[in-house]
Amino acid sequence: MKKEFYELYNHDDIPKIKNFFGYHLCCLIKVLSIVFFGVGAVFLALFAFPVIRLFNLKKNEFGIVARSYISHTFRNFLGFFDFLGISKLNVEDKQAYKNIHSKIIVANHPSLIDFVYIMSLVPNSTCIVRGGLTKTPLAGVIKQAYITNTSNFDDICDECKKLTDKGCNVIIFPAGTRTPRHGYVKYKKGAARIALYTDCDILPLFIGGSDKYGLGKHDPLWSYNHVERYYFDFKILPEIPIADYKTLPEAIAAKHLTDKMEEVIKAAGDEFKKTWTGKTINNY
Image 1 (cartoon, rainbow, N blue to C red):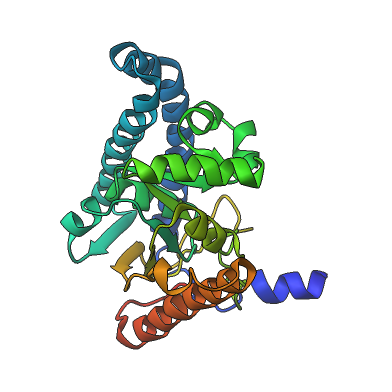
Image 2 (image 1 turned 30 degrees about the vertical axis):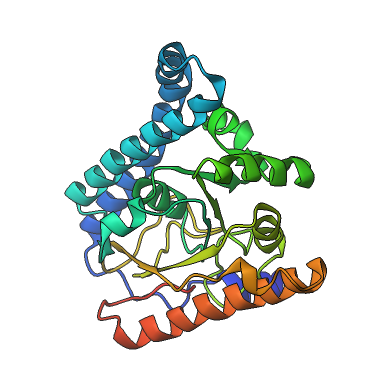
């Protein structure tokens, strides 16, 4: 198991640090930003959300308003990242993301902040997040505005159906975990099953860019891309119409949908590798 773990997550291939001072400064800023993010989440849960509830007396509207507010907060947070030279977003048409409604959004998952970027681009969205996050400073925000993967799956489907019927999108990382530095993680069928249940088309997103070392799974907290900032390239891929799979038995339809998602996102990654001009590149 130790050998398999090393093969998936080793970083022996990372270029050597070129600017020792700059590297450690970026590590410090990254760590402080994570702390700031946690403090911000506590502030939202304790102060901003009660105010939102006060002025939105209809309980079923709270989630929509709260997630829109979070999206705005995330845009400011990432804008600060850009200002500091830590990360930069490359996206062709931001308005196209704002016009997404009632979709199951699936994406590859190379970094810790993929969800933050997607939420900043697609305001009216919820996300199925790891249940373990409810034991972190993010708990107050997650419990009030998002869906945890530790809930009963039927309840998750019901909640997604209620939200997508109102025009909300559901963000799912079908791999179920962040992409390892090497190799691939097979996609799980949960996203496909939710799409079939909600009768919503699937919208794949590809997240490319520079190597996300420092934001990947099992990377040390004090670490950062050795030679360049974090570049995030987002691309909307062709929709996968759910109607093409509704006539199949559910188990078979879920398998075919999952295979299609994986195929579309992997193909986008292969194409991205041919055109990327940065010094490093993330796995997808």
